Length: 445
Image 1 (spheres, rainbow, N blue to C red):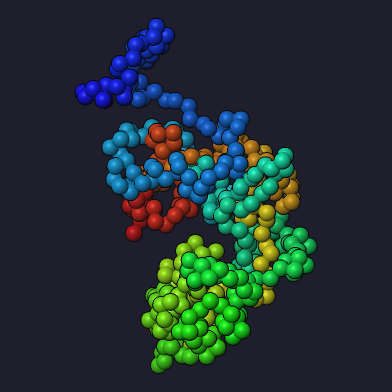
Image 2: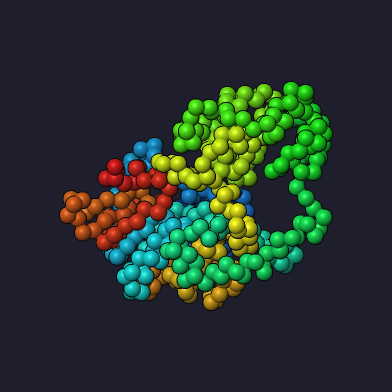
């Protein structure tokens, strides 16, 4: 050991009597562990949700896949998990159904299962995050004693008129009255405030800082003339918006859609429309608010559905193409305003689903009081309740007990608090990310 290492470790410092006695107590305690519990076999209670201050919506920072939610899954992916995890412990718990994933899909699966099997059906929902809802995150901020709500994930019940009978029925069961949004949401608010859409051109990208009204959905010739564009860019953008052309001649609508589905909007503009590369920055961020990525990562077919420029001359059929299952996103919205969302987005939908499963966890009776009610996380995993939600639990293996064709049970292994545990169920629904399923359930094709 080098002198510098000794110094960093504090080897040059004296040991106090207190430090010595503390160390002695720890060392002595090792010898009084029950036989069979060393090393690492003693069960330590891990139940952060039971702590009085446990309330994920009030946490700050990046709250998507937060630290603690993904590490175990990454170890499973990297094939390093089982070497360090140790032997899973069978909890002895048996359920009618185990659901992997506590998002809206998972909570809905639990809801419909109990609806078909009765209130006494035993259900366990496992989720790797510290909160329910999956992509439907709730954020709470307390400012000067006032609680402010925001969505930290999916926001809207989009185009509910397009929903299936089952989906619309679920909204009704949850007490979601769509007509209430028409009176709760002020659709004219921005207009009353004298605000309108505009485009800001930044100096770093376009050579000048300039704010122009309009230019989002309809780009007029006057707007193009005022924008800080070069002559070549101005000409190309004018052509794109005001001179529709069939850039894929000789192909049917279905063939065009199939080709658009396999290229990005960036590639379409550059290689098919033949826009000058210096025109691309004007469109680059158009997909940020919906997809979180630029146009180089979004299919051109999606951008046609969003009514981006460059497709009018293609004369594509409005309906979805065979095999693609895609419908223009804005076409679905034409008859409905974008107003069907709670203050915390779809987190309230998840909370209403949870209320149906565990009424004691979320007090109240209506869609309005579900927004302001405080969720009691200590009630999610209650021994006395037939339905339970267990957070901070990453499922790592799902397999039949015995031959798949004859098995009557499914064994589900999950990691919680650094330890692997096993539960069994008569049925299992994988309501998690499809990309992780091949790792945790190799039996599936």
